[in-house]
Length: 43
Image (cartoon, rainbow, N blue to C red; front, side, top):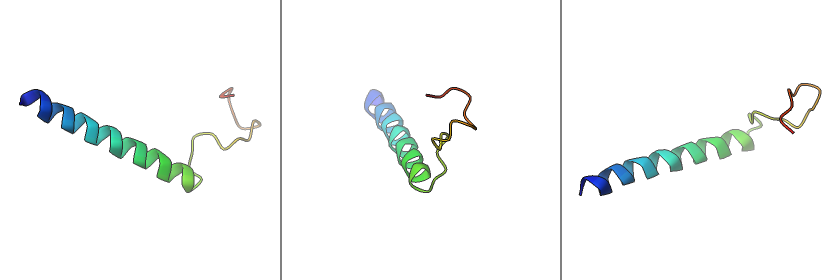
């Protein structure tokens, strides 16, 4: 039962992290804006 609870908590954290990343990307707050002049080699 403890494994299920911990797994549910971890899954919830992963879902919230992905949701936050997608929201930031949609709002233009992504870490890479595609402007290679300001990028330090992400591509």
